[in-house]
Length: 68
Image (cartoon, rainbow, N blue to C red; front, side):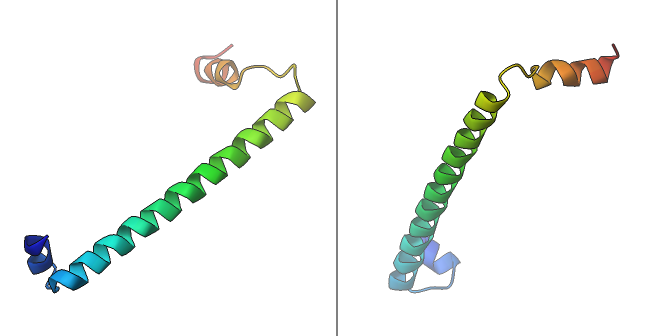
């Protein structure tokens, strides 16, 4: 940690505070990403229930790419 503080031209205390702040921010981002993924899954399930007989998009893309 001391070496990292030197490289960043900070005191050891400032480096610790910066590290803790960075970790807290990463934790918040992970929580936000997880929340967004849950919302995407919820919407995907809702659409699948509304339109149950839709073809697989992978097959449609392959048809477009390689011709019909």
